[in-house]
Image (cartoon, rainbow, N blue to C red; front, side, top):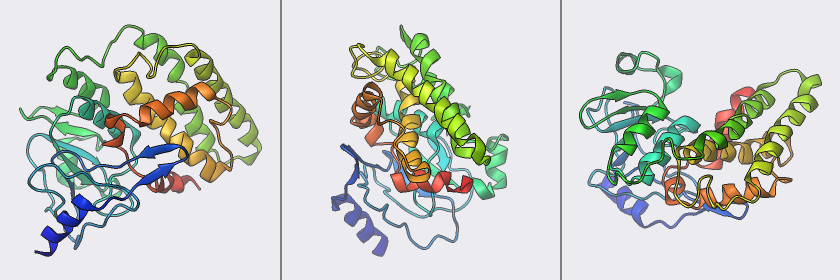
Length: 284
């Protein structure tokens, strides 16, 4: 009865997460959010996030071991029951949510990868998705392409016209951000900050004058699923750790991120800013 009461509480509790002018919500996936910790005694509320529970099982404990088909394995966050900050899993989930697919999420502690998970995916990486037919997909791009084969089939995210042109510019941003954040040589901080600024300036210039509101128009594309989680990380981690707003000068980038974060696909797949900060804390 206690666990049932918690599920009822989660379904009605109106908690909201604010990020500057954006309203972002972290939702439990359509089927359930599960944790792999056999020692878990409770599923904590995600602070300042609203969980949308659709489906019969809700949040619940589970034993270690593979969970069958139609399951997405994702990084566990800072506590049991909290979705981790992996931008590649976020990318895959945005595509799955854009198609309104029903599936379950199983959280894996990547610091202590279970043997059975390494047997399922020898690379030990997330996202790992086992389709309803039992096919194992271990690359986020493969998951997006699989999503394109699902209904509605006339809504395609991958290989849309203009996608390569956009990504040739956008793909430069996240590596520059990662290099800046992971740098241990203080004498290079300004150099790496300037490099990130240059990549953001190029993206900002590219986005100016485009119809939008998303990268390839009004419908979410694979490029949106890639770029939005990356910019989300930048918008949270740089102010917290580097003490400046990396996006402040780039109106077109901020306008795009605002629009992308307002989509249901983002809201239903997002983790909290606290989780982003936790994820990058190992470098500080």
